[in-house]
Image (cartoon, rainbow, N blue to C red; front, top):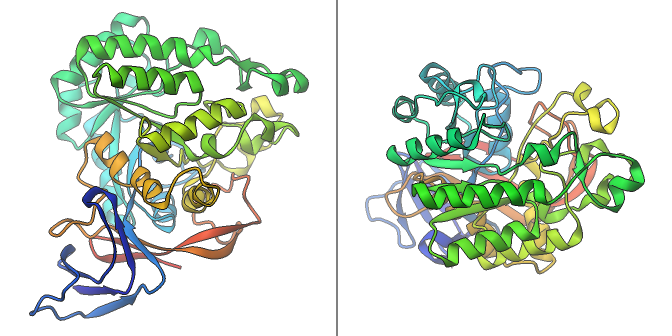
Length: 424
């Protein structure tokens, strides 16, 4: 099918494009930008006048509950939500049951995504069997099954030697190690940032050293093994400084922060609002400002939605006993645009951190709309205001603190290989 997109402002940071032009799509790929190809005959047309055209967003840590936790969401429901949020490529951690430590699970998830057709899934395999931190997973086989990297998420290793062997194995297979640095002995039973609000509310706090002590260890092991590493969901100012220092020393690492940590602080929990219960926890204003600087400076090259849907019952308990996580993919764009409106960074930087930045970190072919590339495209209105409600949410998880809130900035169309998979 041939498709013509007319009149929109194209912003494609990967190719340093920021211009008003037409896009010609044929057989799922970008055929031309600007002047019309003499033989091009469009069967469909999208008028994007006044809208922004950019590569489809790439989300580095997007929880897919299926298999095992279908009450929270399915591959179909959550990839549909991703399409509504402009996300065409999502990296799925092994937070399933059984976990992604076998080729059968990896291929099954990809097959379900292909059948749904809303977004492309790039599975991240478990570093250790069952995420138990003892026996290494079969990374070579998992890579052949389509896994782009490995992670143990926030689960512990039996000892540091096991982690070292995991990083060595990942390096030998040229797989990205997705690391969520956490010292569980320092975290203990904590559920919020260790500060005035945790003390006032009587909630067990998590100190910043629970992240930075583990981050220091992980950086040393990455340097020793030479593995390609991405540090996911950093939450503290010190962590950004440590990443910047390691990059200045020539260490080839990338890192991201979630949209929630860029926008909110631990003050949001002051009324025991469990919808802000996430891990790592929201930190204080100093941490938030340094994370923002890290995004603006390019120390952190990606913004993730940290999408983690839950059923209603998972949030109906005392704060510390609720399941951590926010259904965040459908609010990713408007929240990121709020940061643009507040002068934290420019529109082009925002788009880069949602497209080519995460694509480069994951080492996947996505995040750009160059000629000959797959036509994975997001078209959005940066000014449209709309109400987020349970009815407008496509995700099965309604656990978002922005429910019944007016948001600014809305995805109008999402294309995957030139097919309209979402239209508002």
